[in-house]
Amino acid sequence: MLSRAQAIEEVAGRRFEVVVVGGGITGAGVALDAASRGYSVALLERGDYAEGTSSRSSKMVHGGLRYLQNLDLGLVREALLERQLLVQLAPHLVYPTPFLVPDFPDQRRDRRLGIGLNMYDVMATTRVGRGRREMRSSKEEDEDFYWSPDRHRTIDRDEVLELVPSLASRDPKSAYLFYDCQTDDVRMVLTVLGEAERFGATMLNGAEVTEVTLDAGGRATGVAFVEAESGERIEVGADNVVNATGVWADRIRPEEVVEEEDVPRIAPSRGTHLLIDRDVLSTGDAACIVPAGEGRAIFALPWYGRTLVGTTDNDFEGDIDRPRPGEEEVAYLLEAVNDFFGLSLGDRDLVGAYAGVRPLISTGDPKKSVDISRKAELYETSSGMLTITGGKLTTWRRMAKQTVDRLVEREGREAPCHTAEIPLGMEAREEDLRAPEGVGEEALAQLAFRYGHAARDVLALAREDSKLARPIVSGRPDLLAEAVIAVRREQARTVADVLLRRTRLGLLAAPQLRAAESVREVAAAMGGELGWSRREVKRAAEAWPAAAAEAGVDPAGSLAR
Ligand SMILES: Cc1cc2nc3c(=O)[nH]c(=O)nc-3n(C[C@H](O)[C@H](O)[C@H](O)COP(=O)(O)OP(=O)(O)OC[C@H]3O[C@@H](n4cnc5c(N)ncnc54)[C@H](O)[C@@H]3O)c2cc1C
Image 1 (cartoon, rainbow, N blue to C red):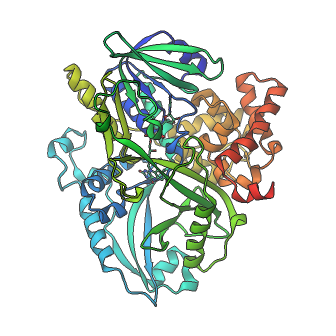
Image 2: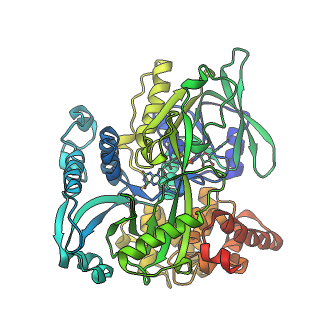
Image 3: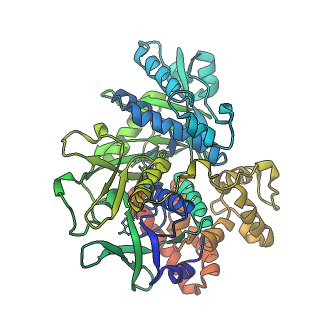
């Protein structure tokens, strides 16, 4: 990625065929799709890339078994096909995980689930429905070329315990086993942005769009944004403006609506997640679906060497700019895992927590958010600005295609979508990476997952300067060199950018990162790149505890302070 200074120069006062507002997965996808069809593209992000919902998801690339209950078959099918494609396009970043739904001696087996899983299997195959032409247009003709998970099956007690030993005290009878996929949501965004840049798109974070500029006839001619560091107002011309600001989409709507009631409203819903040390709660290499009362279910799954528990799904009326895990939601999630695994975990057992707000589309129906569709909505308002919101992390490519198809159609261009064939980053196998002294296998595996081929650049830095080969947090594999790469390649500007998004240490090791002193080396590594004075390094480190508190990553820490 260009440095911020270069990116500002590239966009200020210039005109682009497409200006995308919002640097979450949806905006990143639109930038990649449009750039790869030959459009000149600029993308502007208010805060940091993926800072909104795209860093706060459950990190699953999935069809969404639970949407089958709502008979949202089209959505499930679409997401399952995208899941398959993403494993293909980003094999280092999207990986399958076995999911278990155990049953216990005192329970009846839920046969409806078996039927649902059969449907899930059938809907996940490429042979059904997917256009042959679409398949043929792919470079490979062989359908088996596409990754496809094994069908679901029932496993016996021994196999359940082999996969999830911590269920031993519950004496499970058997379990349904099916597959879904996992990823790192922020890395997905950064990887898609990296590809968009390869096709010529320019990206800038710290660029809050405050205005859609209009001509005398009320048509959008571009946007104006405020650059975070200088506070300067900068204009960028655009033939087309795409609003991909997720849960904030309602805010970028100038006085331009044709029929106010036709425009869908965003109905925010908060989802809280917890992270737990695997020594305290481990689900092995599998995920478990955990009943959570009133017919709801949550999950516990392995992620970056921790156990990720989530999620809640509650209507949210708080500040959407600063969603934090709600106290009651933390208690609800803990109660569900405690009941299920026979434990008595409390706040103090958490190594991290986070909350996100879903940009669910409300049609005025007062249903609860759990029932509102996860479908994406694309709408055009009178200035010609296109807004794309809703949807899922998994379906970003389809949302982007839908948006750029509309642009292409209204301009009468001949420009088909290519994103089904564009690899996302370049895979690196762990065994091809050479570790400098002091860097262990766990770090290599994590770097290969997180950066793909670019892991070599992180390792090269660590080799050049042994200080950078040190872990950021003792006992975790993330290297200080990653803080340097985050600034040099990924426009990171704050310690929070590095700890919450470029690495995920803020969520994975929050108690170890309570003090400003604990992040001093991260700030110093960043400062080396950004030319910070010692005072600025100190200030950057001191800003971290407040940022962590604002995100609510450390529920026990906020009690301890
Ligand atoms: C709790 C939870 C769990 C989820 N789990 C999953 C899951 O497991 N799998 C899945 O597929 N989906 C999941 N989702 C859904 C998925 O995360 C979202 O659909 C997706 O991340 C939305 O991406 P987005 O780019 O539309 O929005 P965002 O990621 O919020 O991006 C919008 C961006 O616009 C920026 N912005 C706002 N205003 C401006 C402005 N004026 N100028 C410039 N930029 C601006 C924001 O800073 C933000 O970065 C989950 C969602 C939640 C909340």
